[in-house]
Image (cartoon, rainbow, N blue to C red; front, side):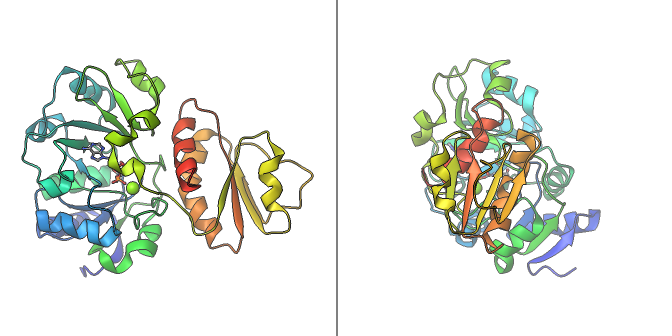
Length: 323
Ligand code: TXA
Ligand code: MG
């Protein structure tokens, strides 16, 4: 099989080839339940450096290390009761747990921090790849730094095409937003990035720190960088104020949300109304990418409420709109 940045379907053979590439120090893009990841051997400093180069990622932004289970996580981090409880409840799944590193995972992967972010993805292709490779896989989202995360193999190819040795196609991802990142180094769980595992879900099994992730952004370097931005201007609508639609006057505007936009405006150029917040989360990044190439001049997106997956959607939209 050729290994030159092509998209290949997920098969036993292609996963085996991908595992060989990872062990050999190369880069493989692969599907997870959240978004596509750009993977390399987390133990191999030179391979991990290639991830930063391919993405144009700032060196101070640490990577998530993908492992096969709790036992493997405990080889790289101090796993105490709080963390073990989270892992038992939410792994495999869209929860990344930040813990003190025990020093095996190299500095470049952790961006020099004394902590490490670990996750077990809930996706058969990702899990087979981790097991077949036999090494922990460092993988950020497989987009150019600052761009919307990729939820399909073709979105990966659009951003990173030539820079990756192989792209495994596992279809569209099911969650559509990146994992929830929590700090579990202390006595309470602190949400650093909201995602598919919601505050409500976490609160059922652990004590949470007060305050939302904005208060803790300094503890997660990536949440300070500009991110998720499409190439055309994005404006946000709270669902009530008409003023947000001033920008839509006389231009081709694209709209997405769970609520219909006000009726008496010029007709939108493209419009998508989601039937649920889960669907909004799943489609958000692919719609940003689709709208920006559609010929639309601006995008207006509805900000949903804070509950459940709504806070993750809001977080990505606010950062994409650079608020
Ligand atoms: O769903 C996901 O999490 C996807 C898939 C591929 O697993 N990955 C992903 O990675 O979104 P990335 O690199 O795009 O986002 C990782 C986030 C960043 O905000 C980074 O700053 C934070 O996790 N992070 C990583 N290690 C950390 C650490 N030791 N302490 C605090 N934050 C950390
Ligand atoms: Mg990312």
